[in-house]
Amino acid sequence: MASLVPRLLGRRTLQPAVALRSPRDPWMRFHGANPPRPCPLFRPSPGVDGCARAARRWWFLSPVRHGSTAVTLNTDGGFARFSVGDPGPNQNGGQNQPPAKKKMSKKSKVNQLKWYRLKAKKKMKSPNPEVRIRYKLGKAKRKEEWLIEKLRKYEAPRAPELVHDPEILTEEEKFYLKRTGEKKKNYVPVGRRGVFGGVVLNMHLHWKKHETMQVVCKPCRPGQVYEYAEELARLSKGTVIDIKPNNTIIFYRGKNYVQPKVMSPPDTLSKQKALEKYRYEQSLEHTSKFVEQLEQELEDYQKHVALFKKREGAISEQISNEDSAVDDLTTNSDTD
Image (tube, rainbow, N blue to C red; front, side, top):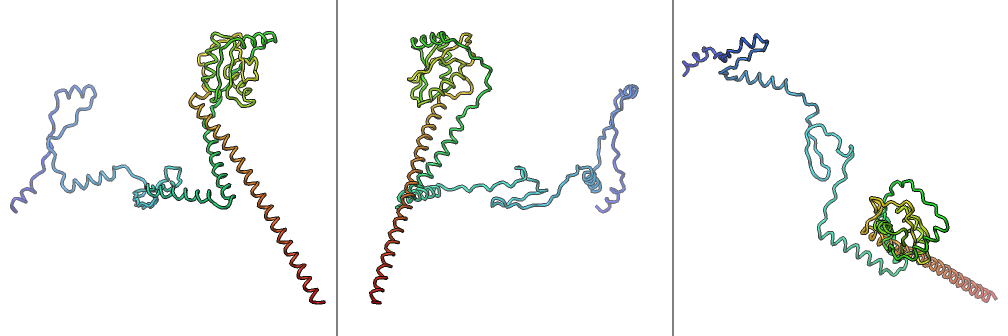
């Protein structure tokens, strides 16, 4: 084996064989095309030196990566996180994220609710009337704020109003239209939901065959019928002829009336949302009355306490004066 080593080392390395050239090479050189590169059939093994040269070549030709490769430890949120590279700013504009809320178990939630109920029960059964009134007042005010926030969601944004020129009617025309509207029986009810898209739609459907129509408002608070008349005139582009004492409005469609393509205005509520808004308004009205009542009760109680303290102070002062008078008499009798 040792005798074979010098022979193997003395051999010459194999030269790469040149691939056969195609007979079209002269024609390609004549036309200016580059001849194909010869393809070696045999490649010698690179060896240790070849591998080292290839590694150095890869190292220098590889793209340069900027930034440090320092390992950083992040312990936010109670967990250890390792990151390699330059710690850049957070995704939320460089601000630290708030710590995640710890999830509560079902038993802890039940215990917390029990504690709140026990605390409220103690306040409700307190012997001090002021504590009871203040607890009810705080609870009512929180409910009032919650209802106001709910009602803000039902405020439909008003669309830009188009230029509408109302027709000018003479007194004779108004009288004729008023009598016509009173004789006819076609009407549109406005109930607890108030003015919504369905009311305007029914008005246009009536105006398809009738010039006048009645809008009956029930239930209606005092003075609310005028608000309904103004709102319906804006949405339907009709003319108000008369408002009766029984909360009935007579509308006239106009001389040059053309039925619109969209008879229900887009800036109105649907039937379901109008009912939800009515319920929240009713609850807000009753809650506001209850808050006023509790504030009056608290004020009366404080006046009563101040008056009681004043009387108690006057009685104690009178007793002290009597005691001082008795002491003076005793001292005078002793001197005599």
